Length: 120
Image 1 (cartoon, rainbow, N blue to C red):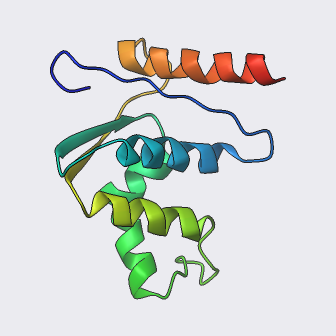
Image 2: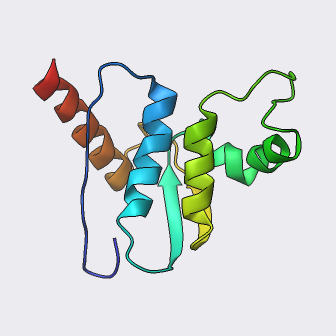
Image 3: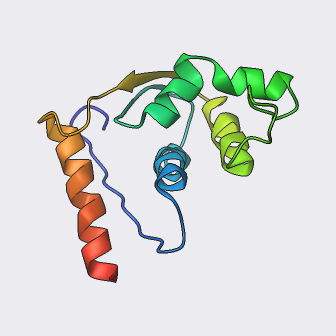
């Protein structure tokens, strides 16, 4: 959303995980931006929000994409792509509590469940 302008996108993939879809949602939205922006990314995904707010991604990069458990980071390719897209912008992640009657989070849930119903 920008001012009065709003664009909604949604998708479906039966052969994926919730975590992959959460990263992909942010990534695909970023790809729609045509020039560098100041953006606020609202998400109910602690996985995505904490990756940046708690600095996980920066530690993974320093540690050759190994987590604190010394194992390879899952979804590395997506994280790298998301990180690269974010470098074009000034960004802030904001955690939204899921199912807390937030208008926009409810809309995202609706779009996601509609895609699932259309494709199953």
